[in-house]
Length: 124
Image (cartoon, rainbow, N blue to C red; front, side, top):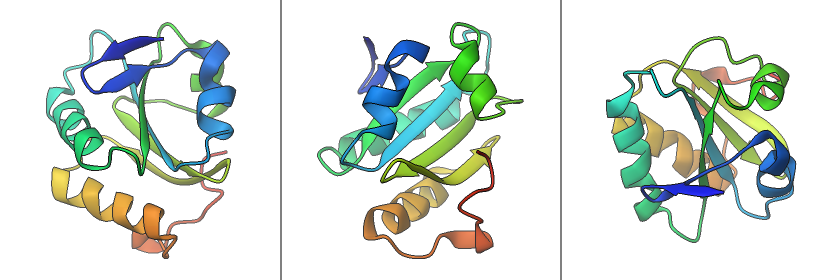
């Protein structure tokens, strides 16, 4: 696994082990090399430092990892998936500001209801 900023880059081969079997909640940011999603990636990178030890953060390059990208129906980048206890609990597609991402993370960590009436099975 290659480390990108404070976030590890993960592959199809390591996804289940690192994400689905994690004891901590996970934020997985799906991107591509050609994506101009720098603002979202910067926010995620900043949040990785703030939530160190509470949440695991990973980046997934959709071009290099078609199996996991297909499994979660990633059709646009950036897409951010939040996992807790091996389950997908929230999916965000497109740009979101740092405050909203932090709000969602706080809810995921606390085990509270997620914002916007999220269906826990919405993407997988």
